[in-house]
Amino acid sequence: MKGEKARVLVADDHLVVRKGVRAILEIERDIAVVGEARDGIEALALCRELEPDIVLLDIAMPGMSGIEVAKLVQREQPQTRIILLTMHEEDEYFFEAVAVGVAGYVVKGASADELLFAIRSVQQGGIYLYPSLAKKLVTDYLRGKTTAAYEGLTPREREVLGLIVEGLPNKQIAERLYVSITTVQTHRAHVMEKLNLHSQAELVKYAIRKGILKPEG
Image (tube, rainbow, N blue to C red; front, top):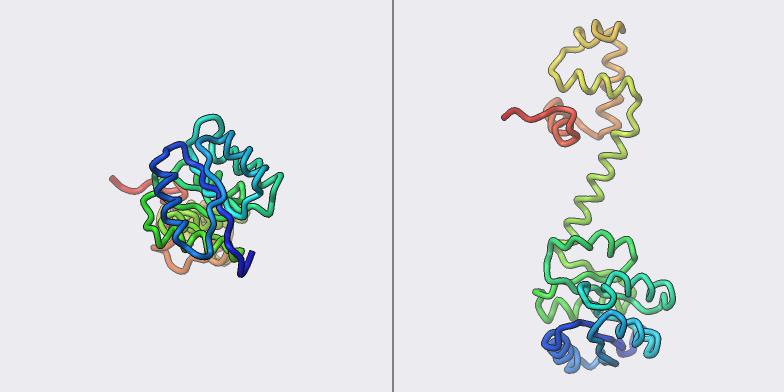
C-alpha cells in the first residue's frame, strides 16, 4: 500500500457523519473513498466486494456492531485494516477492539488532521490510537504487569508483605512467623525486588492499590 492511494470504505449509520468524513477524505490526493455503508451488514458485504485497504468503521451500528464486523473482516481479509470510530473517549469496547486487532481507534470528536494522520499511519502499516485511549491502554498494561508481579510472590513473601504494610518491624514479623530476623530481611528484599519498589512509602501505596491495605478514611 505504500506509495499508492489508500482505498477507504466509510461505514456509519449517520448520513451526516458519512458525508462529512467523505468530504474530508476526497480532497486528499493519497486517499480514495471507494464506498459507504449505513449499517454493519452492508459494511461487511462491501468489504467482501470491494476489498478496501482501510475501513473507517463506526462501533454502534444496526444489524452488526463495528466490533462484530471487524472480527469477521480480520478473519476473512487480513490485508484490510480497520479503524474504529466512536463517540466517546471512555468507550466500553476499547479493550475488546484492541484484542480483535484493529489498526486504529479514533473518537468522532477528533480533528480532520487527526483522522487523516490515523489513516496515513495505518496505510503505512502502523497503529493509531487516539492519545487519551493510548494512555488508557498503557495504564491498563502497567496495572497488568503489577498484578503479574504480585502473583509471582511466594505465599510466605505475600505474608511478609502483609505484615510490613501493617507497620510491623522486622523483629515482630520474625516473632509472628517464628523465623529469624535475617530471614525476614531476605523475604523483604525479595518482595521489593519482585515488585520493583524502593521504599516503605511505595510499598504502602502498592498495598492500597492491591487491596491488601485499606486507606484511612
